[in-house]
Structures are given as C-alpha cells and as structure tokens.
Length: 349
Image (cartoon, rainbow, N blue to C red):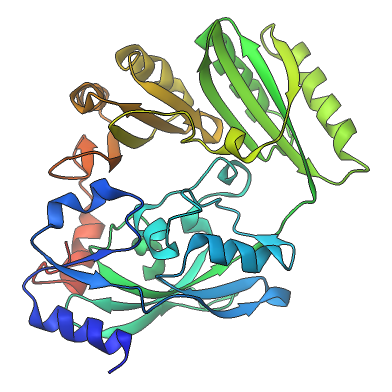
C-alpha cells in the first residue's frame, strides 16, 4: 500500500485526523492532540520540475529548503518567499498561508499555487486545479487550500508557478522620528512605480525604520536605488537614509522577534497606528508594505484583546493555545460550504 492509500485508509478508519509536517509552527497542532496524526514523511521530494515552463510539482511533505535549492540551480525561486525555510514543509506553508517579505512585489501563496492532489474527509483522493499556468476557468478549489490549516483536505502533492530570480539586491534603511512619518513614506512609495522587492516597517531605538529592497541587474540597479532614495527624500517626510548589508536575516520578518507567542495578523497600513498603540509592549514588525503584522510576546492575552477591539483576526504560530485563531472569529460562509462538501463528518481538524 502506497503512502496516499495509507492516508485514505487512516481517514476512513479514524474519528478525527490531523496533519503535522515538520513542526515548525507548533501552535497549529496543540488543539488536535487527540486526533490521529497524518504522517507525510514518505511524501517528500520534487516530483516534476519544468524550468522552461516555470512550474514545479512537489510532495506536500517536501522541505521548502529542498525546493528552493532545486529552483536556485536554474536561477528561479518561489516569489511568495516561504517562511521558516530551514524547517517548514511546502504543505505546511500552504496550509498556514505563510509568505515572507519578498511577497510584496508579486503576491502571496494563493497567487502562485496552480493545483494539488488531495485526500478529503471521506478518504477520496483526487486532483484540484492543474499543472500548467494556463488552465481552464472555473472554481479553483486549490486556492481554498491556502490558509485552510488542513481542515478541508489533506494535501499530498502541490504545483506552483515560479519566476526567474534576479542576480543582485540592494537594501536601504530610512529612519523616521515618528510612526506617522514612516507611514506617510509607505503611502508615497505605494503611489509611485519603484518596483520594490520588499518594504517592511519596524520600531527603532529613536523612532521607526522603513526597510526597502530593490532587485535587478548590476548595470541598472545602482541607478534605480539612487532614484528611489532621492524620490523618498523629496516626496515623503524628512528622514535619514543609509544603505545596509543585504543579508538573509535582514529580510527574515521573524528574526529578532522574541516571545513565547508569535502571531500573524493581516491588516492595512492605516490600521497600524491603532494596533501599535495597543501592543506597544510586544515585539513587532509590519511587513509587505504594512499589510501584515508579525507580533511576538509573552502575553498572548494582550494581543488577543487588541485584535478583538479592532475587529482583526490573527493566526498564532507559536505558543500554547486551545486554538490557533485569535481575535475576531473567522466566519466565511463559502468556506463552510466547501468544508461540508469535502469533510461532512468534520474529521479533519
């Protein structure tokens, strides 16, 4: 019996089942301790990589690091910039909908998933979506897998479109005295065509820092960086700008965020001041041009209270909680209908 057939049998025979990848996001699994665990270790590796077609298919248990290495050999990459690259599986990345700072330019996981092979809550194995970029129009169930936390279907294979990577990067730090000034700079940047690779906002010792990254070719990148810096100095609030070493840790949004609890919150830049005023004791970083908050703290109650007060929802990735969803409950009628069709007995938790 193959690994997919074993998963089908486990689903049919169990009252509750739960998928766990490599454990890089422990808070996603605490609530399902009593469920039968689904082991994806046998579903590991790249299945099909068509570099000329810019598509890759891998098992859900494949490590993000292995996929990134295979793509890098051909000068390509996953534009949604998966987090926890050294530990995470690609299935866990999709299930938790986790993208890094570089998703600023092209979009997140949902924008690059093409299709998947799944096992649903009835133990049926089937494919959703496709394996090519040009696919038939219609309801794309593979998009529903993104952020589903494995509760609609168990992913066994995943197909993505990929992009050519750029050979050079340059990073700049803009320092502002106030949060308001830094946010005005973000609004200015968003209104201009600078083709940034990433744009993150984070607290600094004497105010706020805006980190910007540009990617391109050696012949044009220095001039583009200079134009961007000049534009920001002239069109946004007064600031101090400096070029910084473009290191991996600089663009890891979770680096330097200590705390027992780690949460992801989707929001808009104009919601940042109200949230920041309520979580000022927490470590935080606002990524993707201020559209995503990463919050780390030893006090999850403070984070949850702030999210409820502002009507925001969050996903807890680290810490001991009865459910990974914090803040405002997520109520999606269409998602409930999909769940009813794929998992009518609510086996997938």
